[in-house]
Length: 328
Picture 1: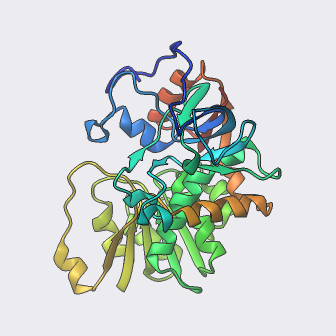
Picture 2: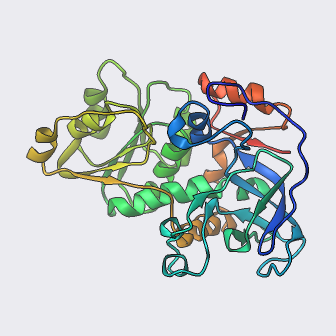
């Protein structure tokens, strides 16, 4: 990236050389994530000019640093974008986001990227590199659904029909939710949402609370906020039942306000969700390995590195795309 509020640029840089304990992956596919868009707009993410974005990627191991074990040349892997030591109690428990050496892995918008063996999961022969690049958003959504305490028969409302919202609908339906309605400000993802497991789709920016109630038939047991915009927590409080749950998956770096009394008077549980566990990453891979087709519906386009700056700007302005993959 060239800096905050600047378009991306394609540049030629030296190929990375792995240090001891590292490896190099030739990137096969990398997803463009909504958080990538935010990283170029908001200083809270800590990105600077010269950083290479891209954390949803898969590829082939093509170089090993001195003494690197746990991976072999030629391995096809999905890269877990959570840097960690691999040996502490959190890492051994699969809770790598809470490792003291935690950091976010980038570099996928490139032909080659450096990572570590403990961040690589080998892909079975049934899974393509494109599949490997959508494991991360599937795992993020699964983590949120797991934290929500969703039970079979629940009524679920998902705010936002982006990749994470659609993946939440997929997991919620798969885990037994009786009703899964997605609410958005536009209708262009409705067909995809219904194909991925949603039982309904509502669009009514003028009356979001009433529209959701009509779509659900009653207040939701769980509302998943998958957008990350101020005002949606307050909206969700009106849409969830007494003693229901609001699960935050949307990344919002702006100040937000809501009436805590309204939440307290309903004894609403407000839960935040960040990242995923290694077990959830593996579970997302296993679903693809089993041949489940719905998650693959997220992908709406594959582009080259040269095409990336223009497509990135188009996504920033909102398009009918869902998940766009880069094929370096």
